[in-house]
Image 1 (tube, rainbow, N blue to C red):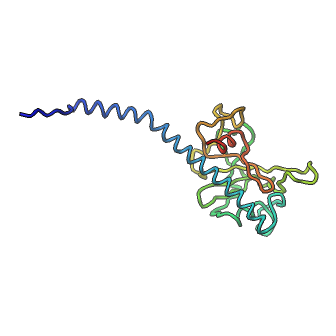
Image 2 (tube, rainbow, N blue to C red; image 1 turned 90 degrees about the horizontal axis):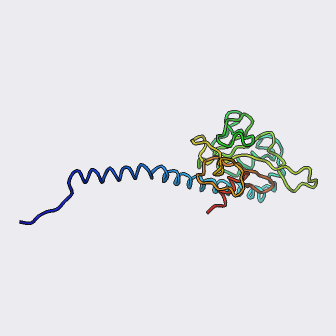
Image 3 (tube, rainbow, N blue to C red; image 1 turned 90 degrees about the vertical axis):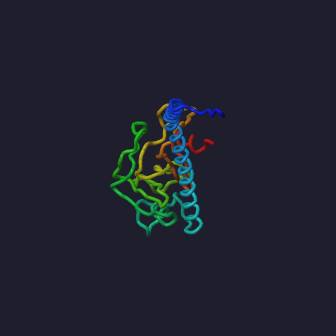
Length: 210
């Protein structure tokens, strides 16, 4: 008579229990890593899209961020006109949605701001900037005293959480040899002339990391 070997019920249950414990320990790290990679990819794509928009506008309309005036009118040379005419904007918001960022005090969480123009793109990305200062953005003014770099933020997934501004591993936006272990969804940016760049060491670390 042939003997058949197999696992007992107790052995199967113990094995499944071990697998469950290992999965519970590793899944959060894996999910955070995957989500961070998605945030990073969306951030790089958004920077590129805004840069291409202003470059296209220069080619077609012959004006860049440096030539803009204050306001949001579609008939004037405004930052708003560049964004709305050259990008796929599905919704705009004023005095109801935005991001207040004032130094390190707001590095962890973005708070609503009533003085922002905010644009929602068809891929879920949001671009928000201070409406009172975003005009004549240039580093090439004939008089260096008139140089003005404009600032804003990119939120790669809109109102959806976590709504946290990217920070270095030490918890601040700026740090020597900044590394970002876990990218989040909000990135400070600066813009002038035909240029859009990161506006913190943390944002730069995410953009230039492999």
